[in-house]
Image (spheres, one colour):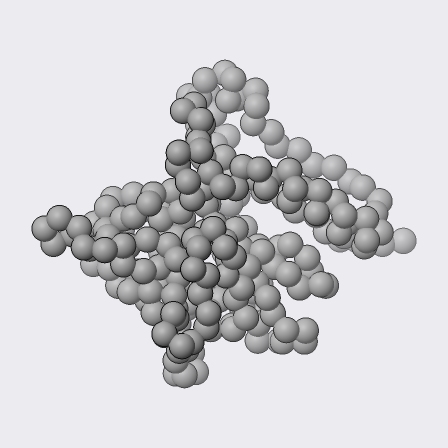
Length: 232
C-alpha cells in the first residue's frame, strides 16, 4: 500500500527526511481545532508538526497504517479500515480515536445506519522542530526509522509481485542508486528540483477526479545524504 502522506523533516542539519504516541509525560496536548495547535482548513494544505508529542502519537504501526489507508480512501469506518490493514474493528476504532485526539483524523459525518466514517484532516504532514530541540529530534528519528522500515517492506513486496503487473508497469518502475559529489547548497538545490518534479501530481492525492483512469498509487522514495565513511 503506497503511503499517501508526506512527512517531511525540515531540520536544516538533516533536510527532507521522513520521520514520528502516547504522551509519556502524562501532559495532554490541547484538542486540535479547538484553540490548540492550528489545523489547516484545506486537506491539501500542510500541517507543521512542532511538538514531540504529536510525533509520538503517530509512531505506531497501526496508526501509520490507518493514516496510509485513509490517504488512499476518502473516508473509512473502523471496520473498513480493519479489513484493509488486517486489524480488528475494535483495535482500529481505538487508534482512530487517538489519532483524532491529536488532530490527524476527524469524523467524516454520519453514514447510513450506525456507520461512523473517518477522514484525514490533511494529506501533508511536515516536521518543523526548533533548532536544538533534542526531544523533537529524538521523536523524529524514532518515526523515521519506523517509516523507512515500512517503505522498504513495501518495496520488497513489489519486487516479489512485480511479475503480476502488466509489462508497461514493470518497465516504468525504477530502483536506482547514485553517488554524487555535492556542496550543501547544491544538495538543497537538488532537493528542490525533486520536489518540483513531484508537485504537478500531488493534487491527485486529494482530488480523485484528476487521476487518469489507468493510474495507480505510486510510492516515490528519495534519499540524499552524505555517504557514511566517504569524507576525505
